[in-house]
Length: 228
Image 1 (cartoon, rainbow, N blue to C red):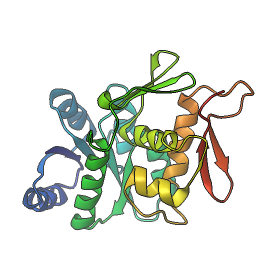
Image 2: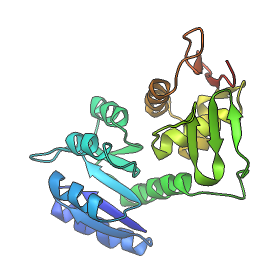
Image 3: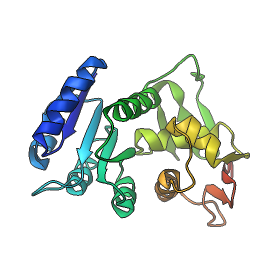
């Protein structure tokens, strides 16, 4: 599995290359934002590990430009305790984040979790096209469209929306949604789901009464409204 790490810390990249090779991953490295973007354009990577703090074009700039032409899953590496950076990264389209210095084993676990979510699993999904009002879901091709127009979703946004649609009209708790869509335990201070839900609301048209298609049930979780 080909992965790209964009980080100006050469020693860290070499360490991760050795460790992830033992975990079955092929890790390529770029040490600045521009060369990282060039590699993404030239190669078919399954996932990108992106450091925020880099000289010149930083990780936020890279992610912003990347999302203009690719939906490859991204794990952001952030300074420990820098919650603002994590939230901004998620808002720009990152799938997950880890604070630096990160444990290589935890990084490998996060990589596997994201790749599991992005892989098509036909034995768990029906091949039949499903419709929820003006939204059409084609599980076999992992595509969603609204009123005939394809929705441009990241892999994580897709999985969150599908998890909610599969229980359309029912409240899905934060804990359950985190486990199903993110493959991780929901923490009380984790805002990952909140940010992704906010992204989805911007991409989905509101209901006829201008209410969002994904409703918040305060203190519990979220509910997807199946039809208008």
